[in-house]
Length: 102
Image 1 (cartoon, rainbow, N blue to C red):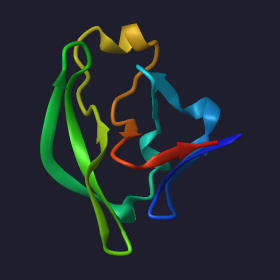
Image 2 (cartoon, rainbow, N blue to C red):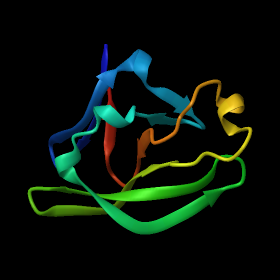
Image 3 (cartoon, rainbow, N blue to C red):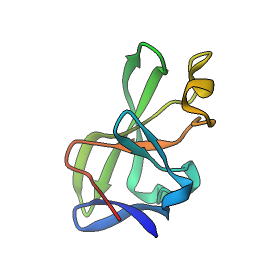
């Protein structure tokens, strides 16, 4: 079974469900599963008290931009990978109207 992230009626990430990670209710897609042509770096960041600094991508499909619509942890905080049980470095999660479906 494949999971997909969809924005503006377009699949922007797709991977087998077993390749994704579920962390705090969010699906995280492996970095190689995102369709890079829809992503641009953002200078927006946030900090999770146990995962560390998260970086964001803007997602744009057919000129419709979703500011900060995807996030990832480039350098997870010490101990967080053990807590998750798998290395989630650069895995991408979505919000702000981006739909994740099976």
